[in-house]
Image 1: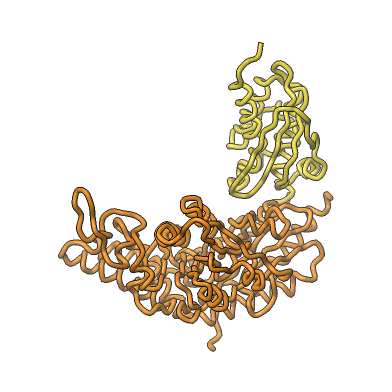
Image 2: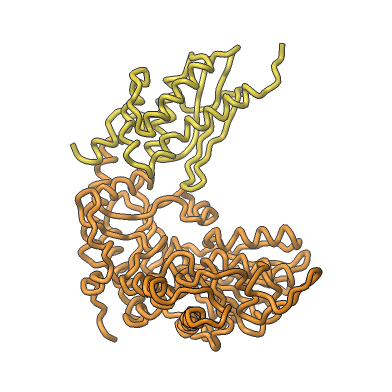
Length: 145
Length: 411
């Protein structure tokens, strides 16, 4: 397998060219993500009911790695509780930092090759860092009872 | 003009023999930072092994030797840019620090509310943000000249922008994205006609274009050593002596003083007034060695080689479908090619080329306003130097076609 084939697997490029859950959710929790060094931008929209992510969408511009990672992330966290989403995020970041991939990451495991490409780690984790920032703001928001 | 011999010169650069992902390295990221020849590294190690001590202090032999080597480096940099005197060359870390020095010292002293600082849309962030910072503090305003459809600086717009409110005109000698060499002399004459000073960001030009600060009619010229075969941490600011003498210090500390009391101090004459603290001595000496090395090749020969490389590459790239190129063609084009593979993000392009051993930059190149003016988020960029060859360009173009086709297959 060539260098390119091993890195840009078909499913990754499919998510890049045909991103899932792309768009905005009016009135939803909204978080911006930015990689200032390369200019990648991401906006994440989270419709949260109680402690569950009912819907999630994203917009933005960036490379195949950052956009496919965001697309796959939305699939992975939709319907999950905030705690579960954070757990997936932790496992994904572990994998990108070179630890063995957790099976429940599903298609996201295809991004494991990035762990060997330090220059692209920030691309792969942009959506996840943005997700964690968004969930942190939920945690810190005053509870309305 | 003697012909430059890239293959022979490459032998001075051990790094150029490296393999990346099993392929011979093609280093096309020279606009970000060039590589170092042995002569520069050896000048620095010789200094450390045989002559190191602090400069401008103490009467012992090593300190005298270190001071002499440091000041010799200053004279070399002055000669390199045809400065009338070495005393108005200040060592800085890089171009960024040099421009911050100008903004904080000259700018803070001279700018008043409503005064205008004129830059252009193609500037590097290093020639934008320092002006924002000083504008916020002084009430001055930053305005920018646009580009023509060919991506040259729009001289008519410059005429419209210049007025008696213009106090500083700060323009890059060469764009780090478009590769265009701006007509600094003409711009400086216009700036002077309205009473403004001319600041030149020479980060890209000094390594590639013969520089004569007097012929350019510049008031300030700045450069970075690491882009011109020198070490990181060594850059320079040159300013007209009569301007520099009137400027207050930027940083305070040792070396830059005349007398210090508990409640006040007086400051050293130029250039020491602007070199607070122990300077990057070895790096300055390395920069001096880099200047010797470049002059040994010849700056006119280096620029001619860069231009030949860019012409050769553009002839191969222009006919290609799906490749977008930015920047004008002609005698004012230096050795930089910003490009995009349509439908593929430049980071992915850069990763694919890296797989072929080819180093290019991808991103906004610290020029976000220019990216907006070009209507793109980012670009890839190949940039050449005297050690690059046409054969490397051939391999680069081949790899680029392969990359384009790989990603196009998934469209």
